Length: 174
Image 1 (tube, rainbow, N blue to C red):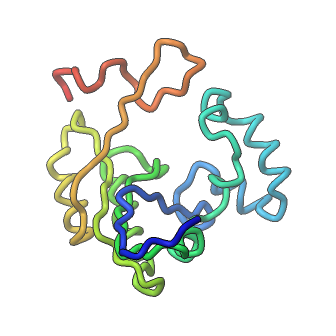
Image 2 (spheres, one colour):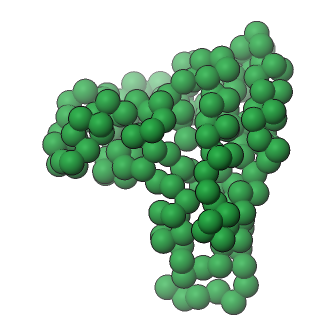
């Protein structure tokens, strides 16, 4: 790869740690983290095929990916700032989604010479406390800038659905 002679902002990164956060694979990695091969076999048995087909290689989702990992992967570039986009935090109901914003805000990006420029969390506009959840996100981090609510839904159940309803963005409740 070629080095760039100017700094960049990475506008879409994900950080996660299944060992220390509410992650759907937390129990698995704590029990079998020493054996990525075994973890892959177990995940392919217990998780839906459509999700496995979306993930592809499971070892990346089952291992932590933190600021030092990002720095190592991108060391050839001068990344001065990043934007974390929500990464399917396991507590998806109500105020549970704010935990991810709080956790990301505490990660040591500065130690890697990277500025956390923004956090895009998640929340469901259909939730009766939506405005309060947005306020809680903003209270959790001064760099919270908005939400992403994934709405990919396919009529073929063999294609992973990221939401519970077709045409979510067109819904009057949304």
